[in-house]
Image 1 (tube, rainbow, N blue to C red):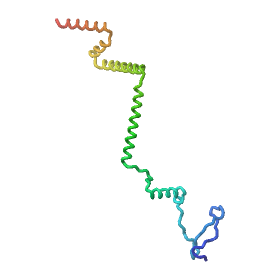
Image 2 (image 1 turned 180 degrees about the vertical axis):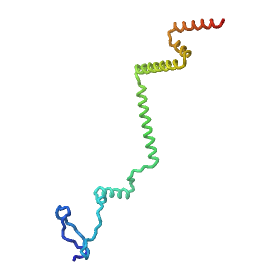
Image 3 (image 1 turned 45 degrees about the vertical axis):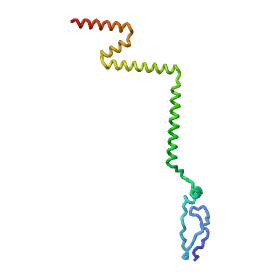
Image 4 (image 1 turned 90 degrees about the vertical axis):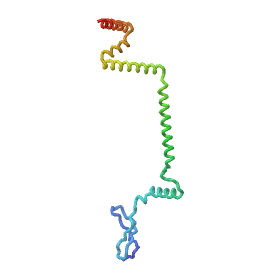
Length: 160
């Protein structure tokens, strides 16, 4: 029997990839002593480098997580809001820089929309209010003729 702490001869790998040099610790009865399992996350080179960097940064007092104080956050938020307002103002100015042709087109479109709304409202209100609006849009000689007819009708109703 072998002593505790001695090693056994090289053993072959279970997968059959050939001999593997394992240093096994054996106790006095010839039993293999368990060894601590390797944690692949902690043994990774990237993890070790990261851990080392964190330790160094903690020692020198550097804020690794980039936590900002409330004042800094508020100031940055205000700066972003100011930039957004300036951007919107510039876009508004660009829209206001229309040529005279574009302005005339817009005015004409507004007139047409107003006329359509007026005709819709006139048809909904009834004959009396619609007649008045039609007379405003009618040619001048038709308006004068309508006034004369209304006066004749009023004169005929009064004496009777």
